[in-house]
Image (cartoon, rainbow, N blue to C red):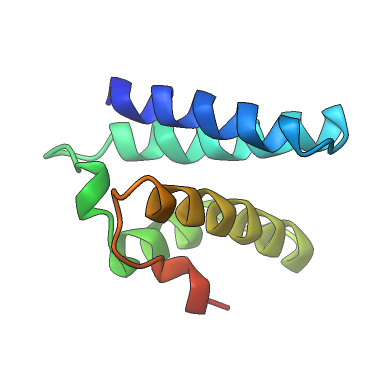
Amino acid sequence: MRRWDRLLDSYIEEYRARGVSTESVAMNAARLERWGRWLKQRRPRVGIERIDADLITRYIDSCSSFRAKATVYGTLSTMRGFGDYLVRQGLWTINPLRWMK
């Protein structure tokens, strides 16, 4: 999933250009890299276009054990922003994260 890495780099540059703090950029990059590593471990490999709400729910479930609610919501918010970016890039038709709570 080298394409994931290119998209992530592009998104982080766009996010940085908004003028947010370097700490926020680093935290969001780390969260999205963790999500990418999790996706890369799935067998068979999942294409970016085929990431659905079920797969996202499984990821959130796997990374939310023994985490504060605020941490889980922060991760979900970061993923939602990246999902919006994927919609703008034309890889997703809708962002399933938009309706997740």
